[in-house]
Length: 424
Ligand code: 2PG
Ligand code: MG
Image (cartoon, rainbow, N blue to C red; front, side):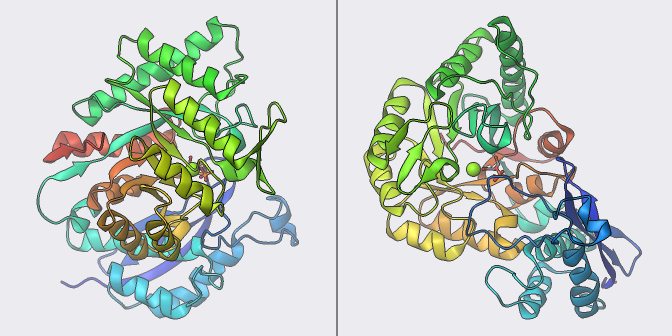
Protein backbone atom coordinates (compact mmCIF):
# COMPACT_ATOMS: atom_id res chain seq x y z
CA UNK A 1 0.00 0.00 0.00
CA UNK A 2 1.43 3.38 -0.98
CA UNK A 3 1.14 5.80 1.89
CA UNK A 4 0.35 9.47 1.39
CA UNK A 5 0.31 12.51 3.67
CA UNK A 6 -3.14 12.99 5.21
CA UNK A 7 -2.47 15.85 7.60
CA UNK A 8 0.38 18.17 8.37
CA UNK A 9 0.33 20.48 11.33
CA UNK A 10 2.83 22.89 12.85
CA UNK A 11 2.94 23.23 16.62
CA UNK A 12 4.86 25.71 18.75
CA UNK A 13 6.74 23.68 21.38
CA UNK A 14 9.63 24.42 23.75
CA UNK A 15 13.31 23.66 23.24
CA UNK A 16 15.89 22.69 25.87
CA UNK A 17 16.44 26.35 26.79
CA UNK A 18 12.71 26.87 27.28
CA UNK A 19 12.40 28.90 24.09
CA UNK A 20 9.72 28.32 21.48
CA UNK A 21 10.53 26.21 18.47
CA UNK A 22 8.67 24.54 15.62
CA UNK A 23 7.43 20.96 15.61
CA UNK A 24 5.93 19.52 12.42
CA UNK A 25 3.44 16.69 12.89
CA UNK A 26 2.69 14.62 9.83
CA UNK A 27 -0.01 11.93 9.72
CA UNK A 28 0.08 9.36 6.93
CA UNK A 29 -2.83 7.53 5.32
CA UNK A 30 -2.25 4.49 7.59
CA UNK A 31 -2.85 6.75 10.62
CA UNK A 32 0.81 6.74 11.69
CA UNK A 33 2.15 9.97 13.22
CA UNK A 34 5.65 11.39 12.49
CA UNK A 35 7.07 14.41 14.22
CA UNK A 36 10.21 16.51 14.00
CA UNK A 37 11.23 19.45 16.17
CA UNK A 38 13.84 21.88 14.94
CA UNK A 39 16.80 23.01 17.08
CA UNK A 40 18.08 26.55 17.46
CA UNK A 41 21.49 28.15 17.99
CA UNK A 42 22.80 30.86 20.33
CA UNK A 43 26.04 31.59 18.51
CA UNK A 44 24.31 31.74 15.15
CA UNK A 45 26.18 32.56 11.98
CA UNK A 46 25.10 35.58 9.95
CA UNK A 47 24.72 33.48 6.82
CA UNK A 48 22.45 30.79 8.26
CA UNK A 49 19.04 30.09 6.78
CA UNK A 50 16.37 32.39 8.23
CA UNK A 51 14.81 31.30 11.49
CA UNK A 52 11.42 33.00 11.58
CA UNK A 53 10.63 34.53 14.98
CA UNK A 54 7.64 36.74 15.81
CA UNK A 55 8.02 40.36 16.83
CA UNK A 56 6.64 39.94 20.34
CA UNK A 57 3.93 42.53 19.80
CA UNK A 58 0.72 40.57 20.39
CA UNK A 59 -0.44 39.50 23.83
CA UNK A 60 0.43 35.82 23.35
CA UNK A 61 3.83 36.61 21.79
CA UNK A 62 5.07 39.02 24.43
CA UNK A 63 5.76 36.37 27.08
CA UNK A 64 8.47 34.90 24.87
CA UNK A 65 10.06 38.32 24.26
CA UNK A 66 9.73 38.11 20.52
CA UNK A 67 11.03 34.57 20.15
CA UNK A 68 7.68 32.86 19.56
CA UNK A 69 7.27 31.04 16.24
CA UNK A 70 3.56 31.49 15.51
CA UNK A 71 4.23 32.81 12.02
CA UNK A 72 6.37 29.78 11.09
CA UNK A 73 3.67 27.47 12.48
CA UNK A 74 1.02 29.39 10.54
CA UNK A 75 3.09 28.96 7.39
CA UNK A 76 3.17 25.18 7.88
CA UNK A 77 -0.58 25.02 8.44
CA UNK A 78 -1.70 27.46 5.78
CA UNK A 79 0.99 27.58 3.11
CA UNK A 80 2.85 24.25 3.19
CA UNK A 81 0.16 21.75 4.31
CA UNK A 82 -2.33 22.54 1.50
CA UNK A 83 0.41 21.77 -1.05
CA UNK A 84 1.73 18.58 0.59
CA UNK A 85 -1.50 16.86 1.65
CA UNK A 86 -2.21 13.88 -0.61
CA UNK A 87 1.39 13.62 -1.82
CA UNK A 88 4.00 10.97 -1.01
CA UNK A 89 6.21 11.36 2.05
CA UNK A 90 9.51 11.35 0.18
CA UNK A 91 12.52 13.50 0.94
CA UNK A 92 13.12 14.57 -2.65
CA UNK A 93 9.51 15.45 -3.44
CA UNK A 94 8.76 17.12 -0.08
CA UNK A 95 11.90 19.24 -0.43
CA UNK A 96 11.06 20.08 -4.06
CA UNK A 97 7.62 21.29 -2.94
CA UNK A 98 9.22 23.42 -0.21
CA UNK A 99 11.63 24.99 -2.70
CA UNK A 100 8.70 25.66 -5.06
CA UNK A 101 6.85 27.43 -2.23
CA UNK A 102 9.87 29.49 -1.18
CA UNK A 103 12.65 29.92 -3.72
CA UNK A 104 14.61 32.39 -1.57
CA UNK A 105 18.02 30.87 -0.73
CA UNK A 106 17.58 31.23 3.02
CA UNK A 107 13.82 30.41 3.22
CA UNK A 108 13.03 33.94 4.24
CA UNK A 109 9.36 33.64 3.26
CA UNK A 110 8.27 30.48 5.06
CA UNK A 111 11.17 30.39 7.55
CA UNK A 112 13.86 27.72 7.72
CA UNK A 113 12.39 26.55 11.02
CA UNK A 114 9.17 25.75 9.13
CA UNK A 115 10.94 24.23 6.12
CA UNK A 116 13.31 22.02 8.11
CA UNK A 117 10.57 20.75 10.45
CA UNK A 118 8.49 19.64 7.45
CA UNK A 119 11.48 18.30 5.52
CA UNK A 120 12.51 16.16 8.52
CA UNK A 121 8.99 14.98 9.30
CA UNK A 122 8.72 13.92 5.64
CA UNK A 123 12.01 11.98 5.85
CA UNK A 124 10.95 10.25 9.07
CA UNK A 125 7.56 9.42 7.53
CA UNK A 126 9.24 8.05 4.42
CA UNK A 127 11.37 5.72 6.55
CA UNK A 128 8.17 4.50 8.21
CA UNK A 129 6.49 3.86 4.89
CA UNK A 130 9.47 1.69 3.89
CA UNK A 131 9.39 0.01 7.34
CA UNK A 132 13.02 0.90 8.04
CA UNK A 133 14.90 3.38 10.21
CA UNK A 134 15.82 6.83 8.91
CA UNK A 135 19.49 5.78 9.02
CA UNK A 136 18.73 2.76 6.81
CA UNK A 137 16.57 4.79 4.46
CA UNK A 138 19.58 7.03 3.82
CA UNK A 139 22.08 4.15 3.66
CA UNK A 140 20.17 1.14 2.38
CA UNK A 141 23.03 -1.38 2.28
CA UNK A 142 26.32 -2.12 4.01
CA UNK A 143 27.28 -1.60 7.64
CA UNK A 144 26.32 1.72 9.19
CA UNK A 145 29.30 3.95 9.93
CA UNK A 146 29.14 4.91 13.60
CA UNK A 147 30.31 8.53 13.91
CA UNK A 148 33.18 9.46 16.24
CA UNK A 149 31.70 11.63 19.00
CA UNK A 150 33.12 15.05 19.84
CA UNK A 151 31.86 15.86 23.32
CA UNK A 152 31.68 19.06 25.29
CA UNK A 153 33.37 19.12 28.71
CA UNK A 154 33.79 22.85 29.38
CA UNK A 155 31.60 25.60 28.00
CA UNK A 156 32.10 29.31 27.69
CA UNK A 157 31.15 32.02 25.26
CA UNK A 158 27.49 32.47 24.44
CA UNK A 159 26.61 29.11 26.03
CA UNK A 160 27.84 29.80 29.55
CA UNK A 161 27.60 33.52 30.17
CA UNK A 162 31.15 34.03 28.94
CA UNK A 163 32.79 31.69 31.51
CA UNK A 164 35.57 31.19 28.95
CA UNK A 165 36.51 33.35 25.96
CA UNK A 166 36.16 30.43 23.58
CA UNK A 167 32.88 28.55 23.37
CA UNK A 168 33.82 24.95 24.12
CA UNK A 169 36.62 22.63 25.17
CA UNK A 170 35.60 19.19 23.92
CA UNK A 171 37.16 15.74 23.90
CA UNK A 172 37.47 13.09 21.19
CA UNK A 173 38.08 9.52 22.38
CA UNK A 174 39.81 8.42 19.19
CA UNK A 175 41.52 5.50 20.95
CA UNK A 176 38.19 3.84 21.77
CA UNK A 177 37.06 0.85 19.74
CA UNK A 178 33.36 1.64 19.63
CA UNK A 179 30.92 4.33 20.65
CA UNK A 180 29.89 2.60 23.87
CA UNK A 181 33.50 2.63 25.01
CA UNK A 182 34.07 6.19 23.78
CA UNK A 183 31.06 7.47 25.73
CA UNK A 184 32.04 5.55 28.86
CA UNK A 185 35.47 7.22 28.80
CA UNK A 186 33.99 10.64 28.13
CA UNK A 187 31.33 10.35 30.86
CA UNK A 188 34.11 9.58 33.30
CA UNK A 189 36.07 12.65 32.14
CA UNK A 190 32.95 14.86 32.46
CA UNK A 191 32.30 13.56 35.98
CA UNK A 192 35.95 13.99 36.92
CA UNK A 193 35.86 17.59 35.66
CA UNK A 194 32.97 18.40 38.00
CA UNK A 195 34.66 16.73 40.99
CA UNK A 196 38.13 18.03 40.31
CA UNK A 197 36.93 21.56 39.52
CA UNK A 198 35.18 21.71 42.90
CA UNK A 199 38.24 20.25 44.65
CA UNK A 200 40.36 23.04 43.14
CA UNK A 201 37.96 25.66 44.48
CA UNK A 202 36.15 26.55 41.27
CA UNK A 203 32.42 27.14 41.12
CA UNK A 204 31.19 24.13 39.17
CA UNK A 205 27.44 24.43 39.50
CA UNK A 206 26.95 26.34 36.25
CA UNK A 207 25.89 23.68 33.78
CA UNK A 208 25.83 25.38 30.40
CA UNK A 209 23.26 25.13 27.60
CA UNK A 210 24.81 21.98 26.16
CA UNK A 211 25.48 20.24 29.48
CA UNK A 212 29.15 21.26 29.74
CA UNK A 213 30.59 22.85 32.86
CA UNK A 214 30.83 26.64 32.87
CA UNK A 215 33.99 26.97 34.96
CA UNK A 216 35.53 30.45 34.83
CA UNK A 217 39.15 29.65 34.01
CA UNK A 218 41.42 32.62 33.47
CA UNK A 219 42.71 31.38 30.13
CA UNK A 220 41.96 28.83 27.42
CA UNK A 221 45.35 27.30 28.13
CA UNK A 222 44.38 26.73 31.77
CA UNK A 223 41.04 25.23 30.69
CA UNK A 224 42.78 22.83 28.28
CA UNK A 225 45.37 21.83 30.90
CA UNK A 226 42.52 21.12 33.32
CA UNK A 227 40.78 18.77 30.86
CA UNK A 228 44.11 17.04 30.17
CA UNK A 229 44.48 16.51 33.94
CA UNK A 230 41.00 14.95 34.02
CA UNK A 231 41.90 12.60 31.14
CA UNK A 232 44.95 11.49 33.13
CA UNK A 233 42.99 11.22 36.38
CA UNK A 234 40.52 8.73 34.89
CA UNK A 235 43.46 6.60 33.74
CA UNK A 236 43.52 7.45 30.03
CA UNK A 237 46.39 8.77 27.96
CA UNK A 238 45.96 12.29 26.54
CA UNK A 239 46.89 12.48 22.88
CA UNK A 240 46.95 8.71 22.51
CA UNK A 241 43.47 7.67 23.63
CA UNK A 242 41.66 10.97 24.14
CA UNK A 243 42.51 14.37 22.64
CA UNK A 244 41.08 17.85 22.83
CA UNK A 245 38.93 19.76 20.36
CA UNK A 246 38.05 23.45 20.58
CA UNK A 247 35.09 25.39 19.30
CA UNK A 248 36.47 28.91 19.38
CA UNK A 249 33.31 30.54 17.91
CA UNK A 250 35.53 33.52 17.13
CA UNK A 251 32.80 35.56 15.44
CA UNK A 252 31.47 36.20 18.93
CA UNK A 253 34.49 38.26 19.95
CA UNK A 254 35.55 39.74 16.62
CA UNK A 255 35.33 43.47 16.22
CA UNK A 256 36.60 45.52 13.27
CA UNK A 257 39.44 43.19 12.35
CA UNK A 258 40.47 42.37 15.92
CA UNK A 259 39.84 39.50 18.30
CA UNK A 260 39.08 40.86 21.75
CA UNK A 261 39.31 38.69 24.86
CA UNK A 262 36.14 39.05 26.90
CA UNK A 263 37.87 38.08 30.12
CA UNK A 264 40.96 40.29 29.87
CA UNK A 265 39.78 42.90 27.38
CA UNK A 266 43.04 42.35 25.48
CA UNK A 267 42.85 43.25 21.79
CA UNK A 268 44.56 40.86 19.34
CA UNK A 269 45.16 41.59 15.70
CA UNK A 270 44.23 38.61 13.49
CA UNK A 271 47.92 37.73 13.23
CA UNK A 272 48.41 37.85 17.00
CA UNK A 273 45.28 35.76 17.45
CA UNK A 274 46.53 33.21 14.96
CA UNK A 275 49.93 33.03 16.70
CA UNK A 276 48.20 32.52 20.04
CA UNK A 277 46.11 29.65 18.65
CA UNK A 278 49.14 28.00 17.07
CA UNK A 279 51.06 28.15 20.35
CA UNK A 280 48.02 26.65 22.15
CA UNK A 281 47.86 23.83 19.60
CA UNK A 282 51.56 23.19 20.04
CA UNK A 283 51.35 23.00 23.81
CA UNK A 284 48.14 20.95 24.22
CA UNK A 285 46.92 17.67 22.66
CA UNK A 286 44.45 19.47 20.38
CA UNK A 287 43.42 17.63 17.20
CA UNK A 288 40.50 19.75 16.05
CA UNK A 289 39.65 23.44 16.07
CA UNK A 290 36.34 24.95 15.00
CA UNK A 291 35.71 28.55 13.96
CA UNK A 292 39.19 29.84 14.90
CA UNK A 293 38.38 33.06 12.99
CA UNK A 294 35.27 35.12 12.37
CA UNK A 295 32.66 34.11 9.81
CA UNK A 296 33.85 36.51 7.08
CA UNK A 297 37.56 36.68 7.88
CA UNK A 298 38.34 34.42 4.89
CA UNK A 299 41.92 35.58 4.52
CA UNK A 300 42.98 34.48 7.99
CA UNK A 301 41.14 31.17 7.72
CA UNK A 302 43.20 30.30 4.63
CA UNK A 303 46.47 31.43 6.18
CA UNK A 304 45.83 29.46 9.34
CA UNK A 305 44.78 26.29 7.50
CA UNK A 306 47.93 26.47 5.35
CA UNK A 307 50.06 26.98 8.44
CA UNK A 308 48.69 24.01 10.40
CA UNK A 309 48.99 22.00 7.20
CA UNK A 310 46.64 19.09 7.89
CA UNK A 311 48.18 18.50 11.34
CA UNK A 312 44.78 19.27 12.85
CA UNK A 313 41.18 19.36 11.75
CA UNK A 314 40.04 22.93 10.98
CA UNK A 315 36.23 23.04 11.00
CA UNK A 316 34.07 25.73 9.47
CA UNK A 317 30.77 26.25 11.31
CA UNK A 318 29.80 29.95 11.19
CA UNK A 319 32.12 30.19 8.18
CA UNK A 320 30.14 27.76 6.01
CA UNK A 321 26.73 27.72 7.75
CA UNK A 322 25.95 24.50 5.81
CA UNK A 323 25.54 26.60 2.64
CA UNK A 324 26.87 25.23 -0.64
CA UNK A 325 28.04 28.57 -2.02
CA UNK A 326 30.14 29.27 1.07
CA UNK A 327 31.57 25.75 1.07
CA UNK A 328 32.50 26.13 -2.61
CA UNK A 329 34.41 29.33 -1.81
CA UNK A 330 36.08 27.59 1.15
CA UNK A 331 37.19 24.66 -1.02
CA UNK A 332 38.64 27.05 -3.61
CA UNK A 333 40.43 29.14 -1.02
CA UNK A 334 41.46 26.16 1.14
CA UNK A 335 39.92 27.95 4.12
CA UNK A 336 39.42 24.81 6.20
CA UNK A 337 39.63 21.02 5.91
CA UNK A 338 36.40 20.12 7.66
CA UNK A 339 32.79 21.28 7.84
CA UNK A 340 30.13 21.26 10.53
CA UNK A 341 26.78 20.16 9.11
CA UNK A 342 23.81 21.68 10.94
CA UNK A 343 20.56 20.95 9.11
CA UNK A 344 18.85 24.04 10.50
CA UNK A 345 21.56 26.30 9.11
CA UNK A 346 20.54 24.97 5.72
CA UNK A 347 16.77 24.50 5.98
CA UNK A 348 16.31 21.21 4.09
CA UNK A 349 17.40 17.60 4.63
CA UNK A 350 18.30 16.99 0.98
CA UNK A 351 20.35 20.17 0.62
CA UNK A 352 22.20 19.56 3.88
CA UNK A 353 23.16 16.16 2.46
CA UNK A 354 24.30 17.81 -0.76
CA UNK A 355 26.62 20.11 1.20
CA UNK A 356 28.01 17.14 3.13
CA UNK A 357 28.55 15.18 -0.10
CA UNK A 358 30.39 18.06 -1.78
CA UNK A 359 32.57 18.53 1.30
CA UNK A 360 33.54 14.85 1.31
CA UNK A 361 34.30 14.99 -2.41
CA UNK A 362 36.74 17.82 -1.69
CA UNK A 363 38.48 15.70 0.95
CA UNK A 364 36.94 17.53 3.91
CA UNK A 365 35.98 15.64 7.05
CA UNK A 366 32.34 16.10 8.07
CA UNK A 367 30.88 16.61 11.54
CA UNK A 368 27.10 16.51 11.91
CA UNK A 369 26.12 18.83 14.75
CA UNK A 370 23.27 19.60 17.10
CA UNK A 371 22.55 23.14 18.31
CA UNK A 372 22.74 24.67 21.75
CA UNK A 373 18.92 24.77 21.85
CA UNK A 374 17.73 21.21 21.21
CA UNK A 375 14.78 18.87 21.60
CA UNK A 376 14.30 15.27 22.72
CA UNK A 377 14.38 14.16 19.07
CA UNK A 378 17.11 11.79 17.92
CA UNK A 379 16.88 12.19 14.12
CA UNK A 380 20.32 13.83 14.09
CA UNK A 381 21.91 10.50 15.06
CA UNK A 382 20.12 8.80 12.16
CA UNK A 383 21.24 11.50 9.74
CA UNK A 384 24.87 11.13 10.86
CA UNK A 385 24.67 7.35 10.40
CA UNK A 386 22.73 7.46 7.15
CA UNK A 387 25.08 10.03 5.66
CA UNK A 388 28.25 8.27 6.97
CA UNK A 389 29.31 11.61 8.36
CA UNK A 390 32.34 10.33 10.25
CA UNK A 391 31.85 12.55 13.32
CA UNK A 392 29.02 13.91 15.46
CA UNK A 393 28.79 16.71 18.01
CA UNK A 394 25.73 17.01 20.25
CA UNK A 395 27.04 18.79 23.35
CA UNK A 396 27.93 17.04 26.59
CA UNK A 397 26.87 13.79 28.24
CA UNK A 398 24.35 15.68 30.40
CA UNK A 399 20.80 16.70 29.49
CA UNK A 400 18.14 14.43 28.00
CA UNK A 401 18.14 16.40 24.75
CA UNK A 402 21.83 15.39 24.42
CA UNK A 403 21.50 11.80 25.65
CA UNK A 404 18.59 11.24 23.23
CA UNK A 405 21.17 11.37 20.42
CA UNK A 406 23.88 9.37 22.24
CA UNK A 407 21.34 6.75 23.26
CA UNK A 408 20.11 6.39 19.70
CA UNK A 409 23.69 5.71 18.59
CA UNK A 410 24.16 3.23 21.43
CA UNK A 411 20.94 1.48 20.40
CA UNK A 412 22.06 1.20 16.78
CA UNK A 413 25.49 -0.09 17.80
CA UNK A 414 23.83 -2.75 19.95
CA UNK A 415 21.36 -3.89 17.32
CA UNK A 416 22.81 -3.35 13.84
CA UNK A 417 25.99 -4.09 11.96
CA UNK A 418 28.20 -1.02 12.37
CA UNK A 419 31.82 0.00 11.91
CA UNK A 420 33.27 2.71 14.13
CA UNK A 421 34.52 5.67 12.17
CA UNK A 422 38.21 6.40 12.77
CA UNK A 423 38.80 9.91 11.42
CA UNK A 424 41.94 10.47 13.56
C1 2PG B 1 28.20 25.51 17.69
C2 2PG B 1 26.85 25.19 18.26
C3 2PG B 1 26.82 23.90 19.03
P1 2PG B 1 25.08 27.06 18.59
O1 2PG B 1 28.63 26.66 17.72
O2 2PG B 1 28.85 24.65 17.13
O3 2PG B 1 27.83 23.85 20.00
O4 2PG B 1 26.37 26.25 19.05
O5 2PG B 1 24.00 26.05 18.37
O6 2PG B 1 24.77 28.01 19.71
O7 2PG B 1 25.45 27.76 17.33
MG1 MG C 1 30.43 26.08 16.47
